Amino acid sequence: MKLHGFNNLTKSLSFCIYDICYAKTAEERDGYIAYIDELYNANRLTEILTETCSIIGANILNIARQDYEPQGASVTILVSEEPVDPKLIDQTEHPGPLPETVVAHLDKSHICVHTYPESHPEGGLCTFRADIEVSTCGVISPLKALNYLIHQLESDIVTIDYRVRGFTRDINGMKHFIDHEINSIQNFMSDDMKSLYDMVDVNVYQENIFHTKNVAQGVRP
Image 1: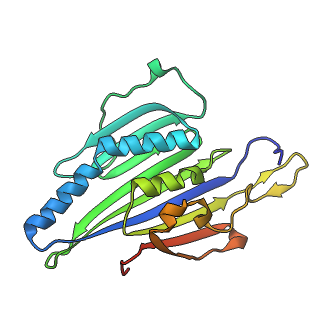
Image 2: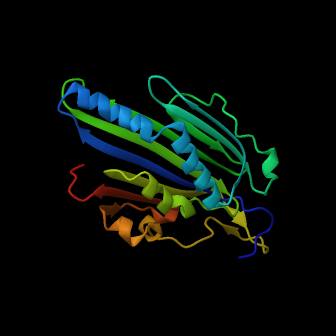
Image 3: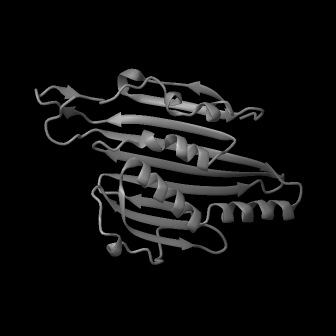
């Protein structure tokens, strides 16, 4: 399909992941929180976001990252669509956004990650939740990063939403509300990943809204 001007479609891929742990004692609970804080520290999140930007075809201009006390981290990445001179890239440490938040600023897209570790005040149930959104415009597709992000953030429960908004025109002036074929988010997941989860789709095709809920086999949501 040849377009008239810029591709104005906005494609957004959102994740909500849950990791569940049962801690018998307060020490185990504190240990789990410390483990999660280390696993998703600023350096690790920077690596994940950097690779995600590479996968979707964005070039990094600036990285600002910060670990917080007692827990949490933030990373901000500024990127462009065109290649830049590596000598001009600033990778020094700077304070980022709010604790436990990751935001990647792209010239035509953005990546946001918010983390929420918590535990029951009396029982031993601990959960870690991370909300992730990859939103792109133009030829960049967030679906390219789907399989990578699921592999990097393997969890007990993963809910995924994909939606396309706006419209673009072809050279004949006809409006198009989506520029690619899709009938299920599952089609963009690898077989080894799909084998780990029981999955259910809820899609609204006429509105270009797609939803998949993944629950690890053996886990009761």
